[in-house]
Image 1 (cartoon, rainbow, N blue to C red):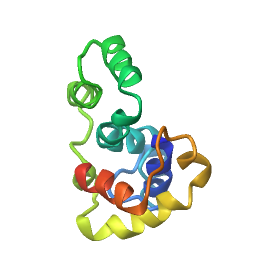
Image 2 (image 1 turned 90 degrees about the vertical axis):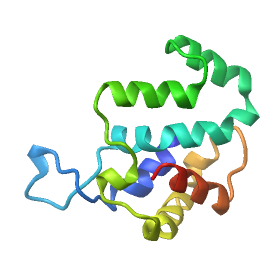
Image 3 (image 1 turned 45 degrees about the horizontal axis):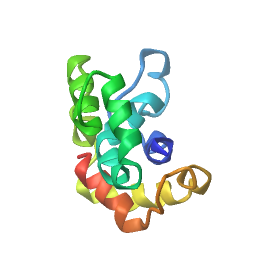
Image 4 (image 1 turned 120 degrees about the vertical axis):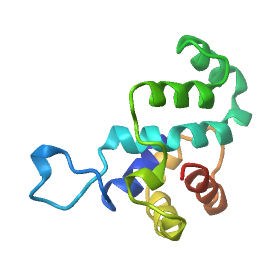
Length: 126
């Protein structure tokens, strides 16, 4: 499911340009896009499967999955949110539209996600 958000951001890249791609348009690497939205996405989906989220957090050495993921991201020096890679609240409608186009990925979510849910994920990921 997190790939939904990365697909929405990946082709709307902002500031991150890997060295091997500097001659092309800026992109956000897939893994980074997934990670930047994962804490907010898991805060939302936790209600659908709290035991799975808890188990994942414990396997990663934490108690709460979104908090644990954020701590790992901080520890490895990930950007601190979508703003850090060039997005703003003005981009949210476009990001939601891009995410909604990824129905094959949204179908994997443990609960149905409406446009408002996607907007919340992007807002909380700023």
